[in-house]
Length: 69
Image (cartoon, rainbow, N blue to C red):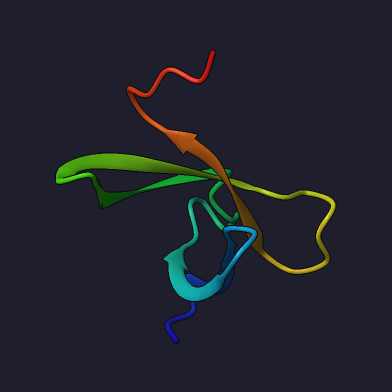
């Protein structure tokens, strides 16, 4: 692992995944997005850093362009 990266856990509730992310000005990223396919459509999955977690854990916040109301 390079000195400008860190290991983070993506916790989707039903599963977790460990990824390597780049530090931004020496700090972990507050939010990240990843492209995923849902029902044949590619959408951006939004993840937010859980500040109450002792490690770098991100929780899924939803999908860009999706209406949750």
